[in-house]
Length: 362
View (tube, rainbow, N blue to C red):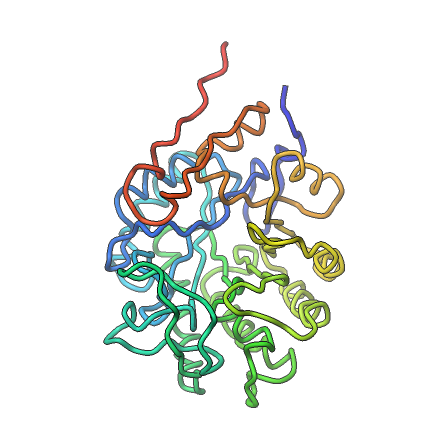
């Protein structure tokens, strides 16, 4: 008997048919090669999880200047395309679907991971009260420079190229990462964006870069194959906003008008208290496909769908330790415990060695 049946009702998400609504959230694992090419083991990792309704790739930097952590993958060279193509081909052969999460970290970076020791770039020249992961472990982020007009134009061009290469790499679509205190979020929230040009001040100005990025990505992927990730509650990486309900309502409405594949909302971060009232207040402003994320289990995920809050639920940490998560939810089976010591960096241990359920008896 299928448990939590709402999670297993097929649904159309933009141009993509989802056989179930248990989606794999983007999960940074710091196991790519130093040049940003996904390691061979990543093919096994993603293919093991191909039963997800959709896989959203780990955050993938759009340029050398978009990098913030060691051993994260890129999508801006031919070698990156070749590395990702092995993964997308394998996922498709296993019956799965996979989007590329396009990522620029902005000021959440360190000079040691950027070309020629460059400073990070952001909406601001103020350093984040945050750390990033370098060859020396976790270190405070470096002071950024504020992007000028030429830098913004180049950044949009980088997103355009990254989307084109993601298509060449065989991805079914792209998710634009505008959450978690990274570059696009640094423009969206006025606790960080204090600019006085056309990219600062009003919410219309502050979401201008996101709109330009979406226009650029849409030159390769049709809107029904583009998702956006937001974090209205996110105080992570030194983020804040003076009026998140008003400002994110405007962002939701702008995205809604674009007929995207989905809006992916990080509703709550691990270890943080819920901002449920804000999430509830914002929800009516997006009428398209809504992907919920943040602290859900099988029962609460099914309930969110049944009550009309979400169309599908993205699961992060549970997918790390349970490559067959949809089947475990379907059977009501217990979950493998995740080894947090192996979340970031390493090899097969804690990455591709978690056990699957045994087959059900005939």
